[in-house]
Amino acid sequence: MDKPKESRPGESASEFSNASVAPLRQSVLVVDDEENFLTLLKWYLSQRGYEVHAASSADEAFTFLQDHRVDIALLDIKLGGRDGLSLLEQMTEHAPGLRVIMMTAYPTVGSIKQAFDKGASRYLTKPVDLQELADALRLLP
Image 1 (cartoon, helix red, strand yellow):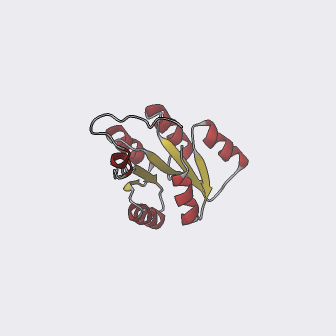
Image 2 (cartoon, one colour; image 1 turned 120 degrees about the horizontal axis):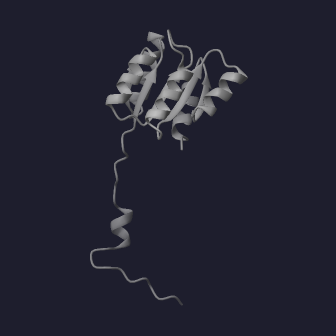
Image 3 (cartoon, helix red, strand yellow; image 1 turned 45 degrees about the horizontal axis):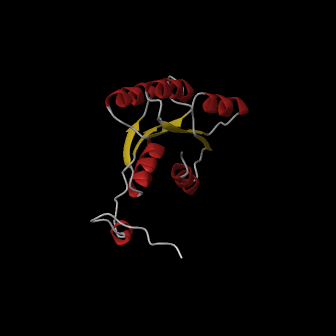
């Protein structure tokens, strides 16, 4: 028979099991030049407890990232002006721990390979299934 583990004063198993720790609210930057899709994602993610920021261009997104901490970025590949893949590269150089999900309505083997080579964690095809997005966010490393 094993001897019960001794506890230190003020420490008991019930203290740990009853502790409620509020989850940290993750910050998400959504970058897409389609206003309706951007609005939908902002609403959907905020309803799920994320702190959501939005940008409609690559330059706006990178400027935001320079001044704010962001945990996750959702980037469209085709943005007006500069593309999302070049933004991905710039963002991951600036913020190495940033987790990025790329989105596109025009997937190609080349763009998928480039996205992962430049640091993307996931790659979703538009129209994005919202449950698939929720799952992708939940499963990010």
